[in-house]
Length: 425
Ligand SMILES: Cc1ncc(COP(=O)(O)O)c(C=O)c1O
Image: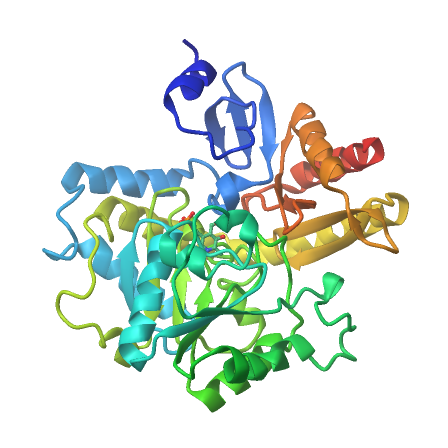
């Protein structure tokens, strides 16, 4: 049996419409190679994970060195140096006063922990999240995910979760236009607290840019307005940087674009360039509100993953990859805006850094989502040797999220293939 046949028989993929028909055998930088030797430019990076590039030598070197010494001890039963060093590093690079980290293995686990911490610190029990958000596949994280496509047949969900319309200007819930709207969607938070809760809101949680929601990019002053309301009502701000963290948006963390300080921040994906690891990081007094027995993870803070994360962060910094992501992203967005002039399927190009969404529509005036066309465009790109993502609440947004090390030449090739693809659909 080959790999695809074994997947069919032994891997549970029934929750997927399909697995992309590529069997990847190796990857380097921004290129992945399949078992037949065909190369693809990777503009999805394993869902925005390998920011420092596939199989980064510095990351591998650090992980291998750690493996020779210690793979696992449970970093919460005994002390492990890479775990301590990484926590110190996160405190140094995280926004504001975020200082103490708890490590888990994946994004959902980090968010579960962050929610729990918000409850223990505030003594309150409710959460407000954004419509069109995505926070994971576990019970609590699905409960605060604002998209029923992800929640069908899994309910009822956790009590005490309510939703605020997303800052999705292209499809404004209030049918208003920025900036004339005076951030109606952010101001609605006050109404939500007033009318939709029992006045026990522990935290408001949001992604700086809504990745799975279709790279929805809030206006520059959005989080300042949100912060004002949260402060007034004594509600914590949890920022979910699982997808936006570690340089993806042209800043180390996406929230840095918005000038607000989170109370708790969650990270995963890009933290260790492909090694499984996640964290929630909080101000000291918030972090210390956990009492003995209230939280743990067997594999969390694994020494090998932490060593890889330290090398990853050093690589991002030394190679100025965060600044590079900003510069490359600006270039790519300008090229895509040019494409928009001739490709009528493009409704909007948006995003920051190398987290770019191209929302496809059938009719620019009516903004009808071009769902089949987006699927076909992705397939065409794959045939031409380009891997891209697909997302959005209607599944009509092409997602361009390459490793930050992607070269100028590769980016030029990406634009060429996207142009061809959009001309076909
Ligand atoms: C913003 C955000 N939060 C949480 C998650 C869940 O992360 P994981 O799949 O590692 O549990 C994702 C995954 O796509 C995400 O994009």
